Every structure is written in structure tokens, then in C-alpha cells.
Image 1 (tube, rainbow, N blue to C red):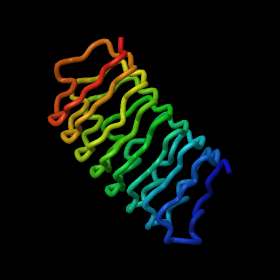
Image 2: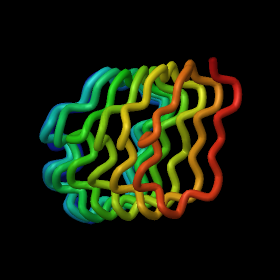
Image 3: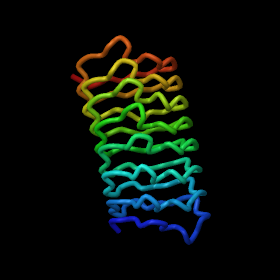
Image 4: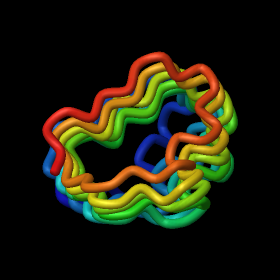
Length: 193
């Protein structure tokens, strides 16, 4: 079904896990999950999603895992995750994301795992991760198109211990590029320019 309609799950408000992966969904109406306050795990993987409505997840305040991997997402709207204080895992891998900024992850203060590998990011902006203070695992920036990392792009990631930038287009690293990564133990920069 190419469009997920409004109020699709009104028949059962007690659902805690929903997997609608591999359904060729192109679009999800903004009220599709409005009544599902108990939802904890949402899997929207391997669909054809190009964009997400800003209010799509606003009522999913108990969500702990959100899987958006293997879609066709190019951009995430600022503050898309504004009410997601309980989210611990966000999987954005294998999409077409070209940019993240300092508002992309606003509302994800308790996120611990971010999967973002295999996208089309070209650069990282200052303070891109400022709202992810509890992030422990960033998996990873491998196989992107990253040419430039602005200084202080990783501010806020005090708990991060591993960082992978393999198979990118980096040609230069600046003095303050990794500023703020006080627990960083492993840095991988293989196969860059």
C-alpha cells in the first residue's frame, strides 16, 4: 500500500511494536499514529519514503526504537523528533540523506544509538550533534560523500568512544574537528582522499 492512511491503528491502542517494513510505502499521513501512545518500537524500514511529515511522530512519546533504514529519505525536517525524549535507537542507515544540522536531532536528548551509515552526506556542520549528549554509539559515517567536517561538529558527544569515517572524500582535518569527544578511543579514517 503506497500511502499509509490516517488513524490506521485506532482499532487497538495497546500495540507496543509495529513492523510495517517492506511494504513499498511512499507516504505516511501525518495522523497515522496519532492514537498509538503505547507504541515503543516502530519499524518503517525498506519502504519508499522520500520525506516525513513534521508531526508524524509527535504523539509517540513512549517510542524507544525507530527504524527508518533503507528508504529514500533525502532530508529530515528540523525538529522532526521534538517529542522523542524516550527514543534510544534511531536507524537512518541506507537512505539518501544529504545534510544534517543542529536542529535535525533536537528532542533526542536520551538517544544512545544512531545508525547513519551509507547515506549521501557531503559535510558536517558545527553543532550537528549538540542535542545527543547521551549518545554512546554512532554507527557510522562510512561510505558517505563527506568532503568537509566543520570544526566543533561533534560538540555534545561526550560519551562517544568510536568514530568511523572510512571510505569518504576527506582531504583535510582541522584542529578543532574532533573537539568535545573527550571519551573517544578509536578513530577510523581509512580510504579518504
